[in-house]
Image (cartoon, rainbow, N blue to C red):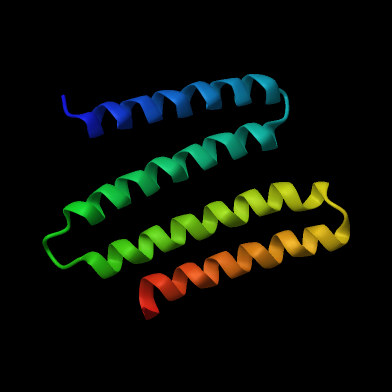
Length: 113
């Protein structure tokens, strides 16, 4: 087993334990449980897309880049939607502004540079 494979397995184990604890703590709040499962699914999809991007030999890089950008933008929006309501209005606006700036910068880096 190579080192990268071991680190990948360790990362997924940590994600699984963290998610199990988050679901346990949020039990009874369907929205929070759905958020944890949704975020986990997006993270796994993002990992698979990144792995495919590294292996890409067939010229599908543009489609994979689009998938990576969409997944990261969706994750950013999901986390901003959970954090912003907990903040005062000015800070919530800053959270959303940073989320939009992050998505725009990612788009620029993936497709315009």
